[in-house]
Length: 322
Image 1 (cartoon, rainbow, N blue to C red):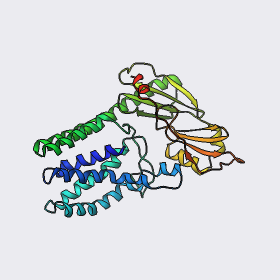
Image 2 (cartoon, rainbow, N blue to C red):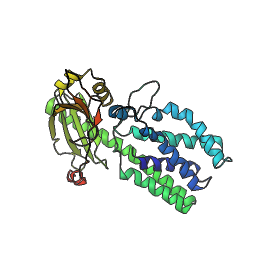
Image 3 (cartoon, rainbow, N blue to C red):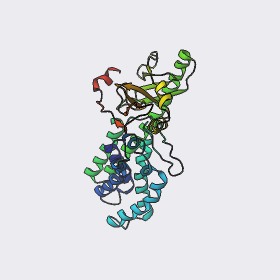
């Protein structure tokens, strides 16, 4: 999730738990710090572009490490601001603000390694866009109201914003389930077998959904709108570079992307160089997570992978789908 959303979410959590017992700005500051803290792992360089992507939501997002770290951080904030508030309340506020970050990342399609050190599996629900105004604006308005009013009414505004955003998360999961079922029904009639299906919202909303279907030879991509639920599903077929995967599947960078993307990837040859793409993120080509693996040299790839520059599509393209 983006920096601003995590900051505001953390602030809303601590204002709800501490805002009536201490100055609201202090409660918001604590929550904002806790909300963005796990995301600071993006600063670390893991050596190459692919490892930077696949390890970004790693140890700093693990629920065990955040739980063990939270009492220390809560003690620090308690003696810095309000020692008279109980240790238990401070711990609950700090812990919830910390884990709100990876739990919200869980709702995106990216992949978050919540279970480290027991498992490095990247968990992802994929029911929320990285940036969604209907999630962030109620939180932001609630926190701002609490900071301005500095009263019980402001605290209620913050709590209302937090509740609304949580309900919106639930709605996104319900909507995703509906679209998955609708897509399955249509795809079963079209091709009779659906082994790999990905359903994620398009940018900034939960009404327009992107559908990706993987087959051994290709991937198919299309869109489904909850505003037009009975419109036939139209998918465009693209080659996924199966022969390149058979040739370079033993390459550690190829294996890394294949694992992290849960099989939703493609490969292609561009001017004697090999590119690999995580198909889960983005909307139609070009995709944001495409990597140049280098030139072909005796069935090997010569270079350290680099991320291919990405230009986001115009907003008008998204709007036209509605």
